[in-house]
Length: 144
Image (tube, rainbow, N blue to C red; front, side, top):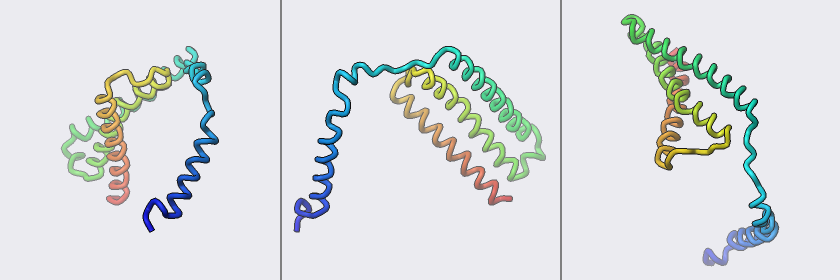
């Protein structure tokens, strides 16, 4: 029995044909042209801009203070817990610096304004920082 004659292929082919016939006319070209991107109103943008500014300011200042306190004190650098907390603050600082502007940009329905390469680099750094943050929290729990 070949792969083309298998029951799975017949089942999937029938399913895909049924799916295509059911949803073929879901949105015609005229309907697609009429769909508009609705922009967020000005009051929502102002409110969320202020909210993100306050959250960003507190996050950046708090994380910078943690990093500064650990770097400046020789005694604090000797503790593994303090070094892990510094790593967490660094990861959170990167997330704040790259994540909040992107969220605001997408909330204003502007989409990604930079090149495809910068999008990929930004996403890589954000995901790496998120994983670093989670793994640092796990390390803190294990170390304790």
